Length: 130
Ligand code: SF4
Ligand code: SF4
Image (cartoon, rainbow, N blue to C red; front, side):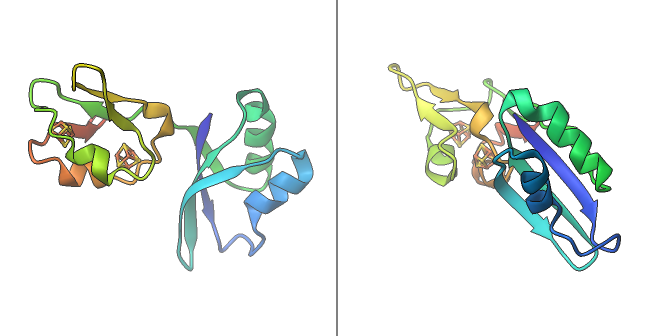
C-alpha cells in the first residue's frame, strides 16, 4: 500500500520516517521524497497489514497521511500505443500486451508525472485532472 506523507520541518528536525521504522519495526520503502527547508512530502510503500499502525504513528509525530489511490488514468480514445510512456517510466508501470496494446500496472506508480509530460497525445492525466 502506498501512502503520501506530508510533514512540517518546523515542528522538529527528527527524521520521522526513520523514527516510525524504529518504533513499529515496519520496513518502509521510500519511493519519492520532496523536502525543502520548511516542509516535506514523501511517497512510501508499506505492507497492507501495517497500514493502521504506521498511519497512527506518523500522525502521532505530526504528519498528515493519505492513502494513494491509482491516480494515473489513460484516455484510451487518445492513446495510439506509441510506447513513449513505456520508455520514460522509471517504475515499469507500462507495457504492451500480446496485441501491442498499452497496459498499466498502476500499483507501481510513484507519481513522478514524467509520462503525463511526454505523452504526445495527452492521453495520460492524474485522476480528476486532464
Ligand atoms: S505515450 Fe501516450 S499515446 Fe503513447 S502509448 Fe503512452 S499513453 Fe499511449
Ligand atoms: S507518473 Fe511516473 S511512475 Fe507513474 S506511471 Fe507515470 S512515469 Fe510511471
